[in-house]
Length: 402
Image 1: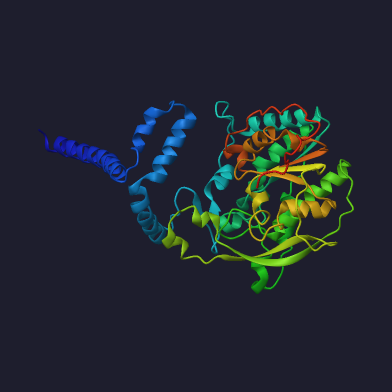
Image 2 (image 1 turned 60 degrees about the horizontal axis):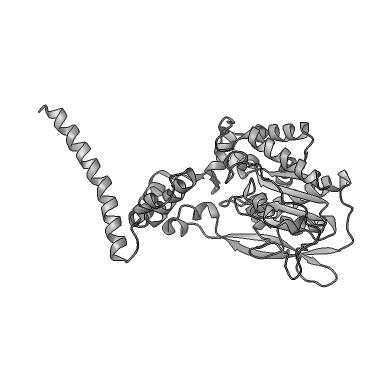
């Protein structure tokens, strides 16, 4: 046998041994622990796209090799090459970025009719939702939130100038197409840029005035206030809702947050290299009682959205997120449904399961982060709304689940 041929066979044999050893060792570990062999799940469920993706995720999270070896390899890659893995990008001056958010900005826009993702699918789903609400006498306002890389591209790479607005082109296009279809949009991008450029404060205070956190996908108080103010301005300008009479004030609250982008690496040794960020929030309180803001499920306005609505609102410190600040700007409480990462489709599916939340509504405000145009969980499905319910069943609660 030629020498080169022997080396090829040895390489192939070694590769096969590694592949099969991983599976065999994992199965042995599961059997010794009294657990079912996870690999056999492949034959227990229908082999469709959803089940195969679930199986893949289960293998990834349950693998002994992944839990044991991945953190060590990830740490070595990060220290040696500043490689943060498949979900994160290390930017400049200590800033981190969520990789799918950057991909949304730099890759060509594509449509995937099978997966129901992409520009055209998003526009079609939004227009359909607007029409379904309009048939019930309910208005729709869409609020696409710019990702961190759109507002701080210069923190990602020095090859992009500060304030370069061309990175927001994909979202500008969808805003134009929605406007052409008669869908009302409140795009806070310009307000974010004004908030960023207006942050001319001493260096010791600059972290408090950023629109986004340095190592997190989410905004800081400047972004929360700018987005809520822009949405409220557009609502009142359209005349859909009159300003209410409830007086809200704010109080400053500091919280510490570990950046979610760093936590996505699931590598404690890397996480320990970065202390939590000190975040100043503005908690919304009622002036008459001093109590923190609370939703009213019977309000005329229903707000739908993703984790950008959850942060500061339903987690620490509470009542300091977009929902509370929108209510403050409008002078009235609102109702809300929040689904982390699921603003494209999942949040509408949740609404379809809670028809009582549409009772008495005049307006739905639908927020989603711009990267969901391409990467939203569940794509952009057409979700039918339930029959109009005149009143909630006796004894039932229409308050949205947290």
